[in-house]
Image 1 (cartoon, rainbow, N blue to C red):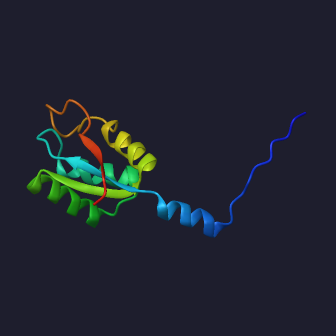
Image 2 (image 1 turned 60 degrees about the vertical axis):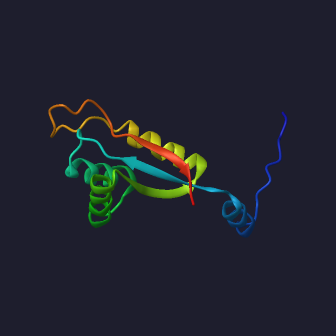
Length: 108
């Protein structure tokens, strides 16, 4: 039997490694196929975002055409973007054909 040694890093080294990792933002885009309640529900269900914060994001998406949902390391941003783009259609809107659009961009 072969045993591989696993190196465990002290907590401060893990935190430093994460701090050195570049950050990315998940951007949500506006469309006419999703309602405010859908956006608020989606953000709460997927990411635990409060109703107040989800309302703010929904308003920004509606009036500016896009909004930053979160900033995180690249792998997490890609996974969270996929959650948004896989969430499904808005049952409140008849012509809603699927999920909202989102992308990952480097954080400023």
